[in-house]
Image: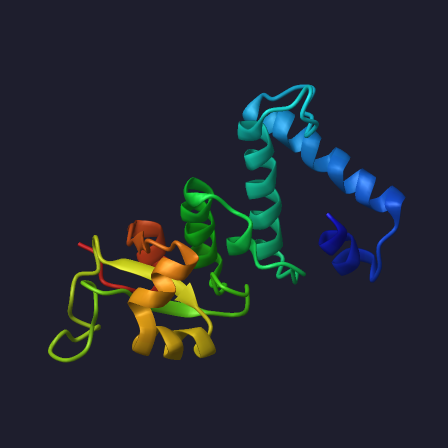
Length: 168
């Protein structure tokens, strides 16, 4: 919420962060039907807190809000998969949130006989990576996938449309 406040007003004010928190709580109530949301250990639960975190991350990706922390360092495996999908949908690097392109992961590679303009991408797995990480993944993919607990996202119709990929 501090990062959203910084992006919105150029700094952080306690009142503004609280208003952002209140806004997202009300959105959770509308969208998920969760009333009286709390992040406290006494009255909250981890499942609802993860929903809030996912909403905040997706908002930041959609609105190009820089984050002080790398989300992959703080998410558990189910949340990482959702974050991977959001990054792909918003063309943001899964590692740092920078502008990204798609990267075909092992088993889904193109080139070397697989012409990207002619192959069917249905079911191939992708991740969104900035240029720096894209190059790194070409040389150390298995190590980086394991380090960040990434699985890649199977191409669906929405992803194919965003990246102009063949899908049949």
